Image (tube, rainbow, N blue to C red; front, side, top):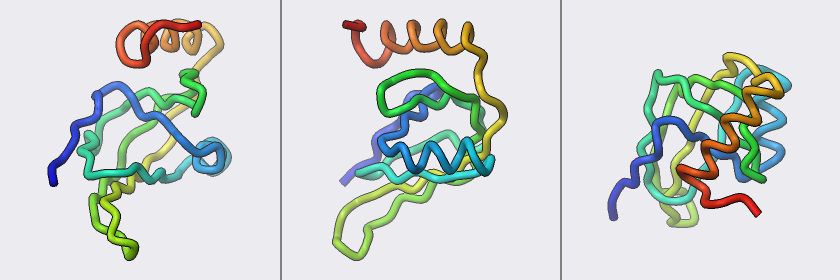
Length: 105
């Protein structure tokens, strides 16, 4: 059992519903598998499930726990700072593929 540290600039959604709630309501949360450490209070870039940069968010809370099914999970609560412009999204997406996600196809 250990904590995995997330990159300080990446907050990648696995669920379209979680992303929709953040963009629609300005606040949202996502659940990640395993114990992870997210930089609470820090602004980060949010990415869609298909690795496209979409917004700047602030991490409000990061709660690591073992759920009722006995799985290690981390819940991350965040607030929307703003959506990225098309140009910002394109540049951030290209950088993320080079640094974190691997080369684009």
